[in-house]
Length: 108
Length: 392
Image (cartoon, chains in turn cyan, red):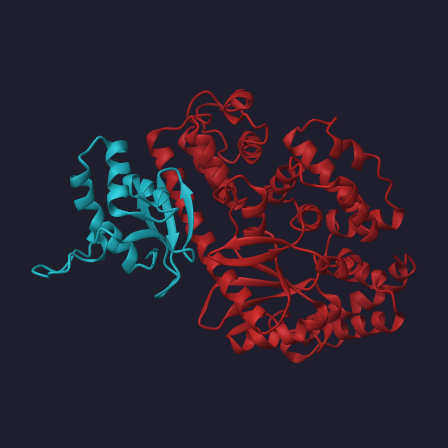
């Protein structure tokens, strides 16, 4: 789940574009087991569930509604007592990874 | 059990069984951490008892409830045990999602072919009757189709790669007489599809008024797709069937389903009883509620308990129930009870002749050879007159 924008690209990548809003792909099946989320996106081989833990599980909770990177970073920064900029830098590859797995989608 | 002379106590002891029952009842009171805490041990279990408990909980498919009791601190564990139950829960949920993905695809497939269907048991009950679907696991996909569209459904599924695990004894047998059939995908047999035409095998499956099952539904949204489940009263009766007409002894999960649904204010108990009467299944409802109340020690003054206790099922229903639940339960016994429940003589004959003279593809996976098959057929035919006279 680490798909950072290509080095040297002028486009910062979908996760870092300020206008991009994210949400769970409604086709993704999921369950919560404590602070672990088990996901089964619809796509690819489709039959291998993924698990995400800890802060990523909170990220999943926040993705219940369309939300921007800045809003996510702000919420998570408040929850973990970190700087929003630091969180945002970590979030971008996580979101790209979830997008690559078809677990989340960008909203129009 | 008291250890003697240093021998370890039997791991799978009665006390482990009782503890599994408490796990299965966990959270029913609405105050799981408080009221029920006394009934759990004060200290972590020994490794042997813990392993026995986890094995039992997995077998009864109630890992989610165990994970809940452990996460709440109601069931004390070592760190290692807590990690083990978290892992077991994640594995169970991953398996649930794989089944659920298949269900969504199959519902779409049947819907695109214009075939009406209902999601039964697992996914439907987990999403509609539990506060969190992660508490209710399952191991297969259960779908109901209309009996008069049975052959079309088998055809559509066949084109998509789903094949029967076993053939039917004669063409048209399944669509008339059976609960359903198990199919697996030819490229991946990890998930079984239990395709139903009715809600139980044997005589009680034949007296379910199938048209009732299609008069309404409860939608459940899964993976962005709206599935149709049975209405809650029908789900309740189906859980009763599952609890007392299925495994002997019954698994804890259908008992928990019933206890869970019994606390649902949406359930119209009058309608449940009317349906049970209409389906000639009052004995099933009565026995299932008795079993659930006894197993979980629920309040005997609860309306569900008192209303069902007042039921007086006809003797022939009680007799039919014995074919499932008694120690004498056997395939032949259930076949004979089924014959008694088939209304038309011509259908009785069709049923018996199909079992006595089945097609080759039906015989091969089930019997060691022609002699074994004829012995079974002879047993069935010899005993017909005695059961035939009971005439359900």
